Length: 630
Ligand SMILES: Nc1nc2c(ncn2[C@@H]2O[C@@H]3COP(=O)(O)O[C@H]4[C@@H](O)[C@H](n5cnc6c(=O)[nH]c(N)nc65)O[C@@H]4COP(=O)(O)O[C@H]3[C@H]2O)c(=O)[nH]1
Image 1 (cartoon, rainbow, N blue to C red):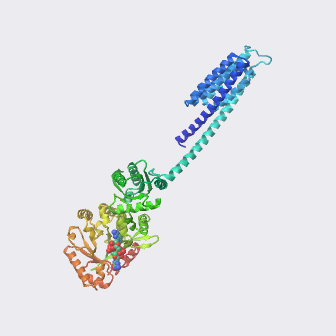
Image 2: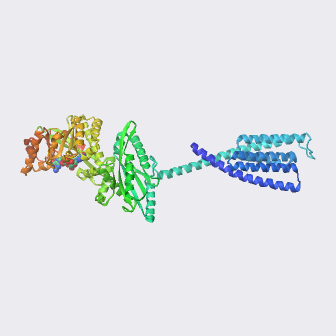
Image 3: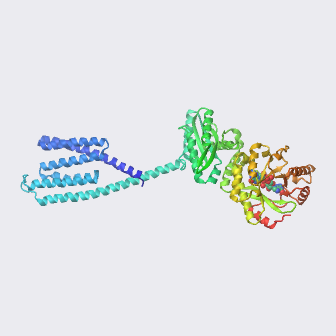
């Protein structure tokens, strides 16, 4: 039980005491005044009248103390006034034979309930002294005793009764107070856990922001307001860019701190009437209410992007974070919470595909991301987490010696419902949505790790080729990713070959060139995939630090049937020779293909003639059987 629990239980008891004390004070006041009237009319005994009047005044004083929350003081005044008043009354009347003596234990009873232990003891001592004093007045003959005089045993008996009564009252009230406090604490605990459960059902534990449930409630409420009063609401779906990388590389503690900072920054960018909520993982939903102009939404989105897009210093790491925002506008873009989620999510992906750290409004043209596509995107986002992605390996052969020199890593997706999916079915989607960055990072790490394991298994010179997407270059941190993959796996850079596309090299020159140069420093080689299929401008070949050209399989397949394709292959081989590049032929399916390409001077080849891409286990079996692949 915490200190707060204790203090609230005590508060409750104080409140209860004050209530009872007030009642007691009123009753006492009424009784005193009635007594005053009766004595005034019947006996007119002045000392008694003065005593009662004095008590009356003290009661009013106690009531005043009570109104200013001085409960202990009011209780003291009440009990001491009554104790003194009664003692005087007993003294003035029949002494220890007076029936008012029986009120002494009653006063002690109230003292035990209302006052501190010290006050109770003082009152007990006071009554003992009063008893002794009155007893003395009896024995000394000061008082006219009548036919039944009080003697010492009588006084002792009164004192014993007082002591026994005090002890039992004190013990009883102590137990009662304890029991009350325990009950109160139990109640408080129950209240607290109810409040906690309520909080947990509606708020996110980490960031303290409303969770999905509360966000949905607020959205529904806002939609009702829109129905009644008109107006617009902006539904923002915010997703952090590359958060997974931060989480994976720096750990969950740092990841959580990043989320906390981001949540705070998002909240700071909003008005008090807006709702920022955590949807889960690195996703946030923001509801902008009472939207008058689209420009206001744009302004807020820019504010959020600026607030989130910061370099955060955590655990001596400078972490660059940014977010992408998708926006759906209510009431036009849907009917319920789920449809707004979906549309804002689609728009968010568009923002990611357009380069990240951007916001995009949902529009009908985005519906081309059909239902199935949407589901596939969702699945693909989870594929990495659920470890559904696999790398297959296709052997690469030295055509002159027939030796297996390595493999190309080709991704597959073991989809839980659709089965094994080829890259053609999802790579484009991954590129459009930006997911290719995370996937590409994983491919790099996994391929390097696998290649290192082959080395450790005795295939010491095996190389691994990995496909890169142009989107990975656009992110600007590819060098760091390659370094990380090499470092983590322990693979030397010279065993890694990165396959680029022609279109990439025709794109933004400077940025690509510097990244390729940086990666090249680690001994990594570059080849151009599907060479010859796209562009006629070959100027870029000398501009970049390339090592190999891969002849596209469409030429290789028709090498016997089409003079034109044969000529293209010859031309590619000549270009490669003149630029000091090696040539790798893809899609070699037959022995004739192999023979002809070898004769033409092609150095390396891949294709079904040797093996289809296969799982790591099958690949190892294949290697063991065919280490000389001729
Ligand atoms: N008919 C025929 N086909 C052959 C033969 N030999 C190889 N192939 C197929 O040709 C493709 C060669 O890969 P690619 O040109 O890099 O083309 C790859 C590559 O551009 C892309 N891809 C694969 N894995 C990744 C990856 O990890 N990252 C990225 N960004 N792209 C990838 O997907 C493309 C298709 O990959 P796959 O479906 O695995 O298809 C592979 C392979 O299975 C043959 O003799 N006959």
